[in-house]
Each structure stands twice: as structure tokens, then as C-alpha cells.
Image (cartoon, rainbow, N blue to C red; front, top):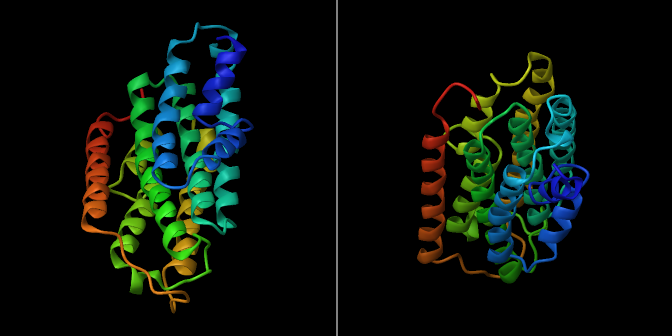
Amino acid sequence: MDLALWALAALFTPLFPLSWLFNRLVASLPAGAIQGFAVLVLPQLGIEILHRAPQGPLCSAAFRPWVMALATASALLYAVRALSARELGVWTRLVLCSGLATVWLAWAVGAPVQVLQLMALGWGLPAAVALYLTGVFVRRVGGAYVGLHGGLVAVMPRMTASLVFAVLALTVTPVFPAFFMLWKGLGSIPVAWLPFWLPLIFLWGWAAGRLFQDLLFGDYRGEPVTDIGGMSVALIGFVFLASLIVSVIGSGGASWR
């Protein structure tokens, strides 16, 4: 594969170090639905480039262990960084970059392109919801900073419920696609890599717990706000239904291959 095409694939389906450019690109877009659309489309574009690019030295069997090492480092780095994120949009992008590193791990062990696309959807759909809700937070309470207002569960229950589902889906909770995709793939990777990947589940869960504690609970400190409407809830529900469908489709078989 040509180096430029490989770099584009690593940019759009983020892999360290080009993942920082992915973060900057998404952050430069208006907060809300546009960022959500971007995290759905860009990883699929990266996978398509990876699939259609001419095969070369960068796709050889000798190079793929290096991709596995880079994907592992990328996933751990962004999971740790998410623990200290103080803004919902930043937190979402960091967890998404950590999760999408699993796409590269699957590619390195020879997973077909359809599996890569389903994996990217499994991470992208909840991230899109979380980024959409970030835009709503920014418009209604002035910012989506963790600990700035607190107590949102009392004043915005529908938005809070939607955010909880998005965060749980994004942090590999059972029932949601990312969990089944990761669990399915653990049998495909060499045993030597498992000690590096299993702690990721703990790190993602820890990051979710810190977010919930600081953003949702306690006493609300801010101006009166209105909750999201029924149409927004219906749209978010449709996205989660799509996630469950992806879960069912992607959970077939015993491995990524």
C-alpha cells in the first residue's frame, strides 16, 4: 500500500500518531450533529481506503505485528487520557479513538472489510449521539464541562438517559455492539497481546464512572434549562436500535476472521 494512502486510512480511522489530527479535525467542526455525522463517516472512509488501496509492503504479514503494537498503544493511550478529560466532547473523542484502534487490530489479524465496517459503526453510533448531546449541552447550559453544573439528572432526565445509554455503549458495556465486537475478536489475537487489551475494559468503565459522577449527579448549579424534546429522544432511540442491529449482525461467528 502506498504510504500516503496508509496515512489517510490512519487519519480517518484514527491510529496514533495521526489520531491527534482526527481529533483536531472533528473538534474544528461545529459542536453537535455535524461532529456526530463526521465520526460516523470518516472511519468508514478510512476503512474503504484501507480496503481498496493497492497491496504493498505496508500490508505484508511481517508488518502487521507492528500495526498490532501501534493499535494497542493507541488504545491504551487514549483510554488513559479519557480519565482526565473535563469536557464531554473531548471525553467522547478520546474514548472513540481508543475504541477505533480495535479496528486496526482486527485488520492486522486479517478480518474482512465487513467486520471492520461493523466495528467502526459499533463505536461511531454511540459517539455520534454523545457528540450531538454535547452540542445541546453547549447551547443550553453554556458548556459541557464535567463538574461545571452537576446534577443534570434532576433537571434534564431525558437528555441524561440518552447520554447514559451513549456512554455505556461507547465503553463496551454488554448488549451494545462494541462489547460483542471486542469479545468476539479476543479469540483472534495472539495470547501474548491479551494482557494489554483486557485492562482496556476496566479503563473505559472507569472513565465512564468518573464522567457520570461529575456530570450527572449532585446538586444542579446553573440557570433553569429545558430538556430535549420527544423528537430528539425518538431519533436517539432509533440510533440505539440501529446499534442493537449492528450487535446482532456482528456477533455471529467465533472470531473476527
